[in-house]
Image 1 (cartoon, rainbow, N blue to C red):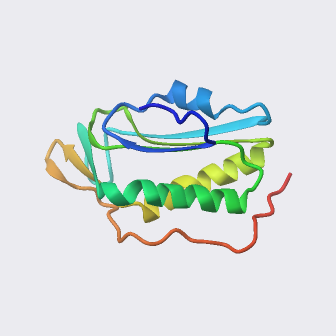
Image 2 (cartoon, rainbow, N blue to C red; image 1 turned 90 degrees about the horizontal axis):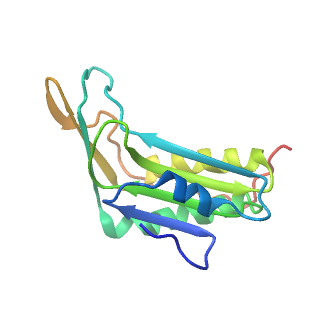
Length: 163
């Protein structure tokens, strides 16, 4: 997983471990006073499933990065002052405690960074074709939250965040 050299957006789908420190460091920008980083981690349970021991992610790979780029584009439309954005997702097997997804946003002020990061992860979950399989003490199956994939919502006007 290597950061882009001359861009303010970094989207990646990878089987490699997500390097939280590297992502954070890259996201820091001279004009940003805030960096918000969300990391979704593999946990040891799900609704009705105790002792989850493994998560495995599969993706419709050729559609993932274009959808992530569309999300970043909409984030920049709604919050034009954001500086850098990272959207990264793992594929393959993950152990409990490993990061499966990271969304990081830097901006001059914290409200925009928080709002854009929240939009990023929520929209990723709803629009990007990535599925997870859980292995737990009594069996294995695809995650309970599987859903149809939808398009990235778009607005015509930039978001007016509070200060």
